[in-house]
Length: 402
Ligand SMILES: *Cc1c(COP(=O)(O)O)cnc(C)c1O
Image (tube, rainbow, N blue to C red):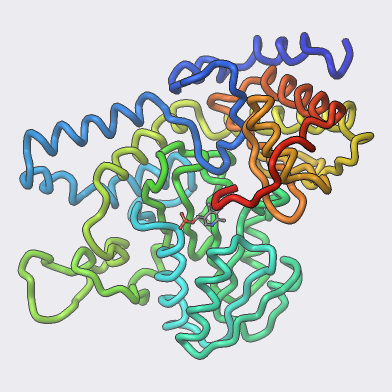
């Protein structure tokens, strides 16, 4: 059978143990091939039901709902710890945004350690911007390096912040060995690995991540943070909010945070968003993170084979590691016309990737709902589009969101 044969993709779908999970998602249009679940996951029916259930309990119970809702950030954090993070109960909290959680944990780490903050130049923008601000507020040096090898070699570092999976190239770092290679506290951003790959935080100090990518919890759903149990007693949130306060409703004169992970709560949590996270992570738990990771590897393998067969003569280059154990769940293709190609795929070919500057078209495969035949069809449409030159007809105007 030809590598580029549709029948091969169909055969992979026929024996896919996760194929049935696709029916748990909402599809507004069957013809659109959605390969941007690494930016915003599709809507799972259980997530819609989880939010609807929260709305009903608000209607029925009003303020009385808080007796249960108040437990949610830590309770959903515990379930996330087990299903996706290899962490222990009491180490994970679902709250705020990834950006805010980086701010909280970076400040807390600097309370404990003297020295510089280190990150890599290719890290996600919000991570770099927040760390730059924290460094200025705390009068510390921010060392921006070009590689993970350099990051762990910086002497006298207090905190090293890295992404587990790089948002552009998709390359995956070895979390345990990088954490061991430095004496600094390491803050991992798991936004591009949680729900897509197995994670083992047992050796890690600190982590954050978002829930609207591979956990499918919806736009703006709360993020999570992880603080290793042994570190928690000495860690203080720089946002001394009342949700982290001991005897919160005593409304006492002074801030006195609880002893556990909930000291990292700030203000009133998003209840509807946290219910969405709970439903999203339960779908991942039901499918099993190992099976999800195996299918993500097979989908990205297929995409790379199709790239080799169909696209190398068309000015494309592979921007992602070939070895499946070294990448996450997206593949980036480089092309000088990447922006126009991404636009043309969306507008003219009903394939949804995204564009990352300067020259990447990113294709995310989310195992719970992407089929092998969609990867085949997307690469076929991409080849056809570039051969025909249709991308020259679309507007190259910049947009606010890419
Ligand atoms: C998506 C993503 C974020 C997003 O942060 P928000 O605060 O949710 O906007 C942060 N870091 C990485 C690595 C991401 O991929």
